Length: 212
Figure 1 (cartoon, rainbow, N blue to C red):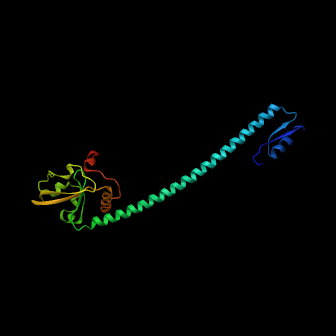
Figure 2: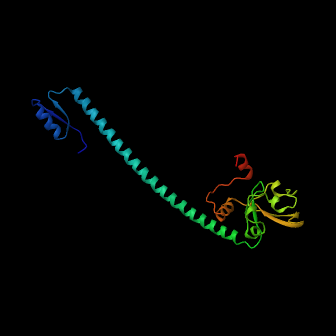
């Protein structure tokens, strides 16, 4: 009954001492007889409405607390999932980086504008690290012209490997180029191999448009 509002009803003479004592004992109101029924009913109605509002507010607070606890649990679970995914991604990056650095044959990776993003150690030994950032036809072809059948002139399918025969390469040689469309995972691995921490890339054309 601690939450039940109490109205003191008395026929005794009203004094400040008696009123204060009634309030100190837990009264919410103090009425002197004779009572006016309408006034008593109105006071009781007000206290009932206040009690109902208090109960609703308590229920709302409990529901919010439960929602917060559920949200915190879901955030914790999602954070753990993201951490696990990041660990797997870092392990994959490490593997790809190691693979790219240890390739025993010539391999390069170029963007849609032909700009070289990565050279394997074999090609770095042949052309030096300055080859990264140049267009592939500037580095390899004698006339520094883009190949007529250059794969960059047409859409490249991710994961599909094709071959192209190119002449006038590195002193009049004719070579067969094998090329494959790759996804961002390999680009990230290239960035790791070259010491870049950012996970964003742009093409040479995009850099020019940005004034780079």
